[in-house]
Image 1 (cartoon, rainbow, N blue to C red):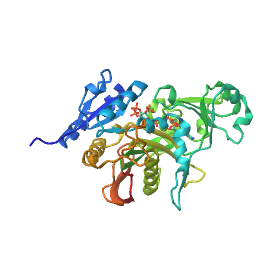
Image 2 (image 1 turned 180 degrees about the horizontal axis):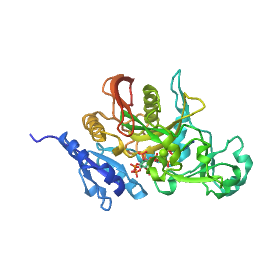
Image 3 (image 1 turned 45 degrees about the horizontal axis):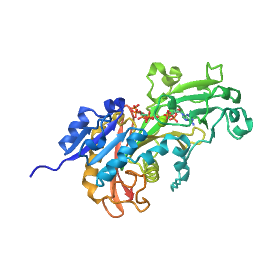
Image 4 (image 1 turned 90 degrees about the vertical axis):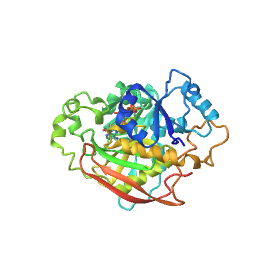
Length: 369
Ligand SMILES: O=P(O)(O)O[C@@H]1[C@@H](OP(=O)(O)O)[C@H](OP(=O)(O)O)[C@H](O)[C@H](OP(=O)(O)O)[C@H]1OP(=O)(O)O
Ligand SMILES: Nc1ncnc2c1ncn2[C@@H]1O[C@H](COP(=O)(O)OP(=O)(O)O)[C@@H](O)[C@H]1O
Ligand SMILES: [Mg+2]
Ligand SMILES: [Mg+2]
């Protein structure tokens, strides 16, 4: 009898397709019975396939409608992830709301989000009262985080007078000194990996040479060294010497976020408050991030796809998904392998191929079925 293969159709923007769909991933997945097939987004989705699963980072009303139709015609197919769940990450306020609602018992470390306010119009920007209680410097971030270049354009603002240079709607978030290092926590289903990256330098380094009171920047952790805001600072700073956050703590947060966001594929940015060394602040959550930057991403993703293939048949509707609701995929997550506990692998390592620690961890039910 012919081998039963699991077909995953992917719909990705060209840049994403180029970085994520590498030959090494396609061939490893194929060797384990998973076919990765490109979806032509210029053609109707229903004319393509058949697909057991759709993997997508693709937007627009038309695409959403096509996914709804696809779901009606293919009730057993998985859609990763639900457009509704992804949507929540497209607004920098709703994105971080889940963090504030998360409860994790940890005696040594604490977590939260930096103090922030949202400004919808120019008048409020001039209103000093609106910013009362907010300490400068602040980072001004576009409210919308839809993946456009514009949505990554930030400004470090040193005083209230400079706010008038900004274009609402924006979020003003207190800048927190964090030693110039950011932790990026990648989540792929039950798998969690934390890496270090360079970030904005602490004040006053960030302010050095700045006379305007406002410093614009974009995608700091992805910049080449030449483009770094203050290269001298990074030379002085030792990325290698920075201690990682405790593995179990990061994993607990990742697990909690995965449940409440109802997403399988995301990462989040965490900084450690230099003033309170045990306080961690989550500043950003991204859907389907640059996984190809994770060493060994092919295996992590292939393992995840194989888990999907194995567990697909046992996936059920979640109790809170109403019939006919415009929820695609959000009612489907990978069920746990045992009734209430399972062993899973969590990895913490350095971004640039440094030391890597893999630990087997016991965790409670990581996802609901
Ligand atoms: O392209 P990459 O590999 O830098 O990945 C970007 C992510 O970088 P990261 O994995 O966190 O280092 C990036 O993360 P940051 O916002 O830089 O924290 C975003 O997830 C970005 O997607 P979008 O533009 O917000 O839709 C991601 O871009 P897309 O590839 O999804 O367009
Ligand atoms: N509250 C903050 N305090 C200090 N640095 C921050 C803060 N928020 C963001 N940053 C820095 O700005 C960068 C971009 O901000 P982020 O919210 O992650 O936006 P993006 O979605 O474009 O990645 C972060 O990677 C970090 O270096
Ligand atoms: Mg970020
Ligand atoms: Mg982001």
